[in-house]
Image 1 (cartoon, rainbow, N blue to C red):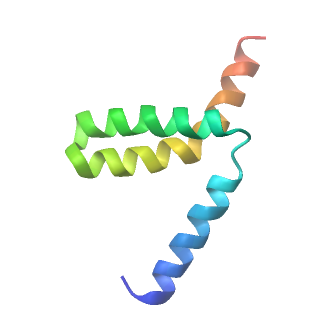
Image 2: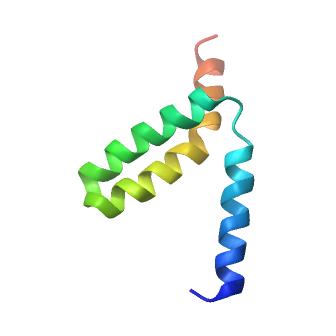
Length: 69
């Protein structure tokens, strides 16, 4: 990966993780994502799933809270 693409990826990931409301959401989402990714794709899937889970956790939590009201 060249330097500009790596920089854009790192900045995007940092901004997405900063959008999490609480640490519990980030850690919980990362744990679930890593577990699911490990089952589906092995070690690489665990890394990708953990990152995706940490990024998407606040959205999932908000949608779940709205649906249960």
